[in-house]
Length: 144
Ligand code: 5GP
Image 1 (cartoon, rainbow, N blue to C red):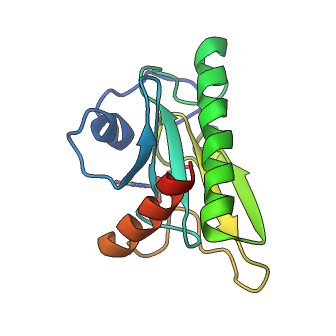
Image 2 (image 1 turned 30 degrees about the horizontal axis):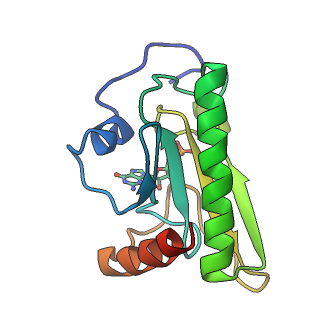
């Protein structure tokens, strides 16, 4: 999909938001939802989305929604750092297929990094064990 086009209300993150697809949730409020990435690039890799926005990417989101989303990104980054004690936290976000975007509901990645551990492939690694994701989500949620 290119940078322009229509929002697909049946994309996987829209289904997760509506509770129609499973996800390991970390925290949520009226506006935003944080959940574990099921193909993590690093231990504790999580995602955060706006629940009401139909923006496919950063270029499309309304400023008020963006403010709410960035508050949640910071909360998630802080909680991940506190809960998992990484050496660093990578925050990433892709706009358009050529940039690496694979799910077209705007989202930010929060990826804890350790100096001696290589970063896994983006959207191309193995599926994580659900039990392990639940343990990590519980720790991050407790620190949020
Ligand atoms: P993008 O490539 O669009 O920036 O990132 C999409 C992310 O969503 C990838 O990191 C990928 O691992 C993750 N992902 C894809 N399908 C699912 C899913 O069904 N559940 C969850 N929790 N994450 C997913």
